[in-house]
Amino acid sequence: MTRRSAGTAWIGPHVVFGPGVSLGEDVEIRPFCHLEGCTIESGARIGPHARLRPGAAIATGARIGNFVEVKASRVGAGAAVGHLSYVGDSGYRRRQQYRRGNGHLQL
Image 1 (tube, rainbow, N blue to C red):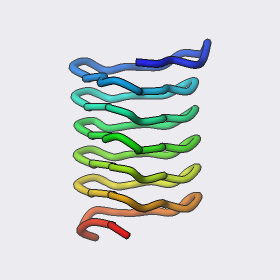
Image 2: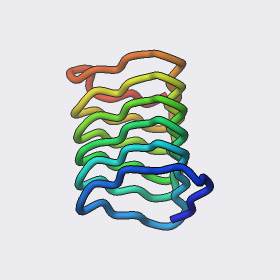
Image 3: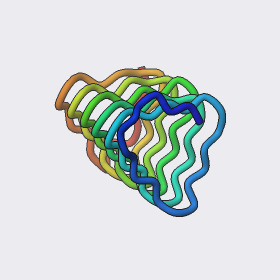
């Protein structure tokens, strides 16, 4: 895990860190998440049970819900990805909402 900030992060139990993870300040990683090759900026909330695969970039204040998988995508500042979602090879704009039941987003 690469940590580039002097701030705090809350890391829940049973979180798996693979290589190439970068955390900003005041990040919350909830239990049972799997992180690999991703960047999580300040104030973001992840999980629980989320998976961030290589190339995932989570911007300031974004929220990734439970059972969400993100691969090679950018989730913009303040955006939210609801539970039971897959985001692959795409991007989210600022403050955009993506909720359960939409299937998956792949561009």
